[in-house]
Length: 266
Ligand code: KIV
Ligand code: NA
Image (cartoon, rainbow, N blue to C red; front, side, top):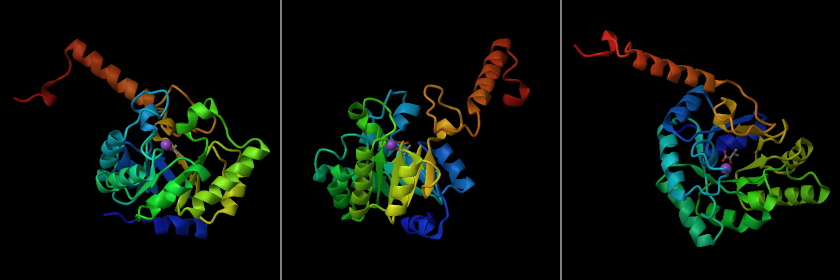
């Protein structure tokens, strides 16, 4: 039984309570963060990089997002579950975008979807919101735009880009999104956007003045050695614990000390 809705998330901005968001891709992680009291869980297409081992998020499919969304929803009882629309599931035309957003709600069980883009994607956001599916926007460093950006780079450092991002934020708000992810932009710009729009901003690499924060769970737990952007803080080092457990298992099996009587049937 869900307790959090988009009304709760919107109210938190009004009341000045920070919104906590983490990504999850499966049942056990969703369950642990839900029990810990996270406000929102994002089934991110970052699953492609941190779980599937791709270099970027572009290969992730709608079917894969459906699978991970169902797993996360089963592990969640209180947090709001938002799922990413993967690359090519919403860019081609509005009909396809609407059907795919609908599938993530109907078959996946998510409460909202997230799309990357600003003014260029506003009509798509509107089309999905018009079918009563809540939408989260996502502007700045949008990983699905990696080939345009020429890599994962901070966006909005130059004045022209910064003004475009402000226009993008307004367009996303006007299109009916209920929240907006700001990724990889200078903190002062994120602050200006946060003060400009009425919907909550959720920052990742966007400074402390956003209405909430999101990070990738594998990054904060030290489960992803490959890349570590400046904005990631390791709140735990789980890799060490996992490696230790695996080594101990291998050693005991090789030595014939596992399974012992305690773990065997008489
Ligand atoms: O896919 C993802 O994890 C995301 C967040 C980091 C915003 O889109
Ligand atoms: Na994403």
